[in-house]
Length: 92
Image 1 (cartoon, rainbow, N blue to C red):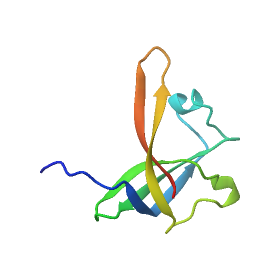
Image 2 (cartoon, rainbow, N blue to C red; image 1 turned 120 degrees about the horizontal axis):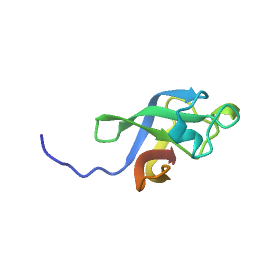
Image 3 (cartoon, rainbow, N blue to C red; image 1 turned 90 degrees about the horizontal axis):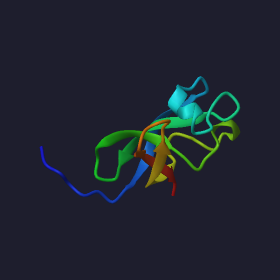
Image 4 (cartoon, rainbow, N blue to C red; image 1 turned 180 degrees about the vertical axis):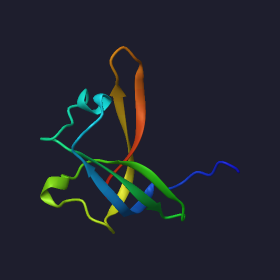
């Protein structure tokens, strides 16, 4: 195995919308009235990766399989812990 730099672009292969959220996501403002979306992104280089999908509202049908995505990162601060950076993708 070796590290390889990627362009950070891909296509959404599958996704799910999460409305019953864990406590760490409630702390970020997500819940039944503000669900979040995770998905499998097929990178231009070929590999697939699981990531948070941001910048599109799944309640309005803005998230769909085949949509073009670009990499982004989200900083989460959990109660009593340091900031964590989470891999995310947003519509290109």
